[in-house]
Length: 305
Image 1 (cartoon, rainbow, N blue to C red):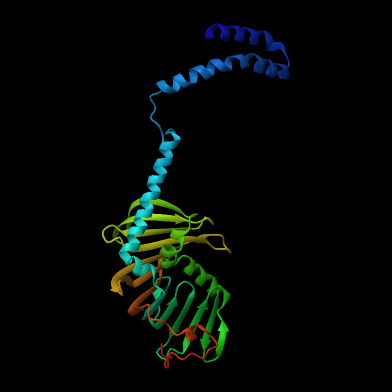
Image 2: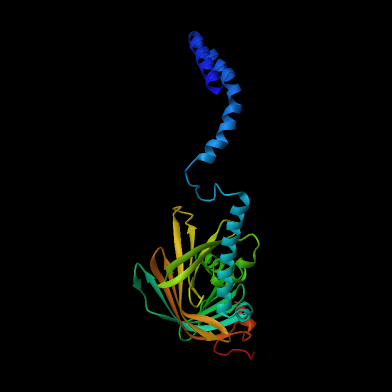
């Protein structure tokens, strides 16, 4: 029956070959429309007899695809939770303040500068003081989105270009990601599977927030401790993307928390900074005067805690 209709349509088209183009188009639409139900009836059968394998999730039922996505999310969240437990669990999540001392190195195009001693004091989530030189007479204080530099010349605001970098580093800081990002219901968890990171066999997870900002974390496959963190950002001047990474190594236990004593920062594949810690103290209340840039706080004569 379908073949008979096609022969009739071909005859009608042959008769219409002398019509204007516009009339031919309208006539074709009119004549072919009745064939549509036959095409609909035959399409499912053709699909059922097809030997082509299904591709990705496109041919899966909607429920099965959703379950696959849920499983991926569950695996990603499980990897993050294992990392938090490896870092100390509640002891890690309840860190209020951290005091460290060590030596830091800066690199530019592979060339390193002399190491600088530093003393760092941090109150979660946005108070920090870093002191430099043996005399500890140069310091930077960060309070929220503001920064101050303290020298023998007095107190001055930190340059805006330095503040932009500081805010970015704090936004993507490992502690902020593991203590704030993971509790945001709008954050998407992506399980990336096995990877090699910082010479470790690792499990890789990516988190994406509601602003489409992403951070990738690599956890050691055996210890579950973080070994690498990476994120990208676009330079507002040249519009090029930059990749920043942090490598965590030499973990030691301090007050029930696993702390990486060696941290290496990479910028677009090149080493940019290294930090080696000498001492770490956790949850020993800090003198609040140190976070007031105008308090005259003297680190060599600290007030009693």
